[in-house]
Length: 163
Image 1 (tube, one colour):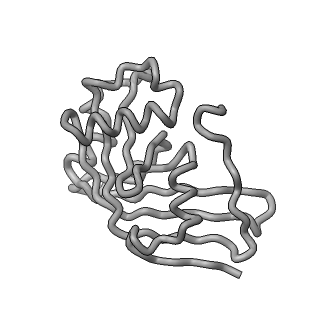
Image 2 (spheres, helix red, strand yellow):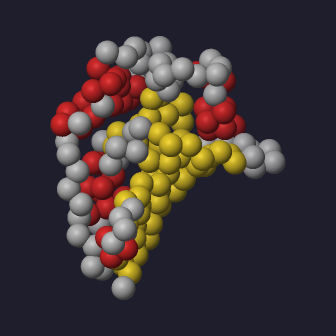
């Protein structure tokens, strides 16, 4: 049995929003505007109940932050997909949340500052990392597809500080 719902964020099932709040890793899919060259990349993120944020942090990169392919793709084509999933060998516990949305690159402002605070609360690694002066990706959910087995039980994850 499957349980699939396609909704705006206001109608997204509670289990799916809880998964989006607690999950530690998601995958961002974006593409260029011309030619549609695709990129799917794992990202750390935070969700504030309405927007999803991801930092271009200080981990080693091959280029300057604003020249990264995910950043340049979003500037060229803001349509993105973001997925959070839960895999388990017991397939009755599989679940995913697929967010179709639009993304923007923030470099300053109130939303930028709030995103940094949110990301630092979720990931202890960000507490000492300099995020100011680096881009933040902001994703506005437009449509959400949430799926899980009807037999699925919500999987409890440790808090961000407990890891």
